[in-house]
Image 1 (cartoon, helix red, strand yellow):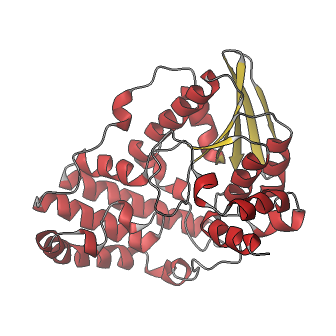
Image 2 (cartoon, helix red, strand yellow; image 1 turned 180 degrees about the horizontal axis):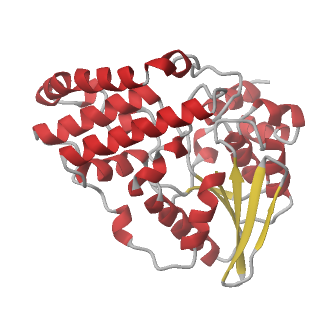
Image 3 (cartoon, helix red, strand yellow; image 1 turned 90 degrees about the vertical axis):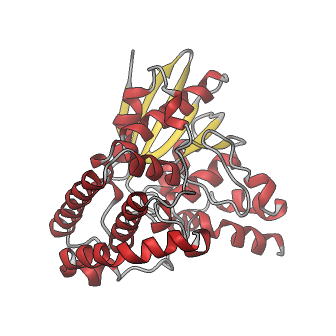
Amino acid sequence: SSLICHALPGMVAHRSLPIGNRFVHLFGVQGYNSAAGSHEVFKMISSTRLGAVLMESFVVDGQPVQPGAVVPYHKTLPSKGLQRAVEVVAEPSFQSAWTVEAVAALTAMRHDAKVVFADRLHTQSFDRLIERRSLDEMRHSLIHATEAVATAMESTPGWSLPPQNCVCPLFPELWEERHKVMAHFAAQQASAGADVGVVVGSQHIDGVAEYLNQDFDETLLAEPKGRDGNDPVEWEKRAAVGAFLTTTRIFPPWCALPNEQEMTEDQLNLVKKFYPKYRNAFVGRLAGFQQRLAGISDGTQILGLGHLAGLCKQLDQQ
């Protein structure tokens, strides 16, 4: 099939692929939590008539959002404030201050396109990852992943945090499977009769494009067995992955390890038994980068999806 492909200088890659009589536009950004590419994504979404814009993430208070579902921003954010937010997103100064994912979501709503969660929940991906590996396999995988983080940090001194994509390709659950899921939901939205935009990290573009016209394996969305048991091996694996995520901050630890209040007393005791040795091992290997790993807080100057509710409340009261 024909393919249009171009990239805006250093910011956003763009591939357009036909599916039926519609197009799926893949917008590849440098990072979801960066403003790099916000201006370009605003222009690209605004100049393309889209029925839906698919995203890797969402932030909605108190509302569970399932993979492939519309993110209910219109229901959860103050209507007047949201209306004003989709107006101010057109201002370049706003785009410079907000992450590309927030700009993309607001721009989609500005043009009456649905915002759709196109990824799998990270908890589901990590549950699959943990369930499908033995304890020894998990240890070896985490050693490999830790070396990948060290290599990434060494090769790019300017990074405060390692990018997710230095680790995700090592785990099919965090890479190929997610590409298949995103491609599936993009095709699903296109089949509804409108062109579709998909905003992803630039390194995901080729993977999503590869699976766009392939049959989908529904088991990729099946729920893993869950986190209810007290199997020591499972909780040692969870403790190990949680310690890795705490150390590297590539994903939040709760993706693999529930918060304390969500664990039973037996589960918590198992975690307390296993967690320290893994945490010490990861901190020891990455000791030279700990200052950098701890040097960026969640309160960065760039505002993201988590700040949308506050913005809309503020605008609602003006």
